[in-house]
Image: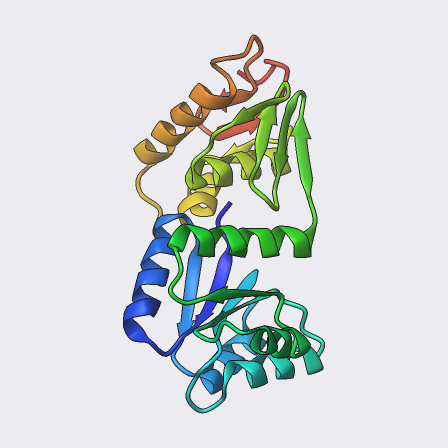
Length: 226
């Protein structure tokens, strides 16, 4: 599942690379160029994880993190730094950082650490219908104990259906939940539902995704509404 990430980084090239990579992986990213702006955005926004550079103009990352913790804000913080000494890391942890990543870094490792911080912070939220199980926090889905490989869009669609199950979710609401306000046409939703069915229904004996003609879709183990 995509996460809402606040990136506080003053190096524009690096920030653009991180932003582009995370958004292509299904996350939503907001960006601040300095510590003061980042602190304000962190206070006003509801973020899953903050990726925070240590050396920032106007207010450094240590002060940003310390102020957030002093205000009782427990959002996970991944600190980015070029300083790779034990004292630097201990100082960061002492100010409230949850993890450290030393520059330069691989984008896949950055995403893995972001997801891990979020998972540790939030724990698990299990949604289930029959033998289909989705951990809404980590995005991991299984059916009959078999791991399912879902795209970010498929995960959002499945989570929406699971949260509403066994009720029907109309097509317009489904599209908005998956794509946001700028949702594509209904044909795109139908295509996404077909792709999700190929993963969670086709390999198994009992289909779970039900079409309610003229309205939308629902998730259920019976076929009464087909």
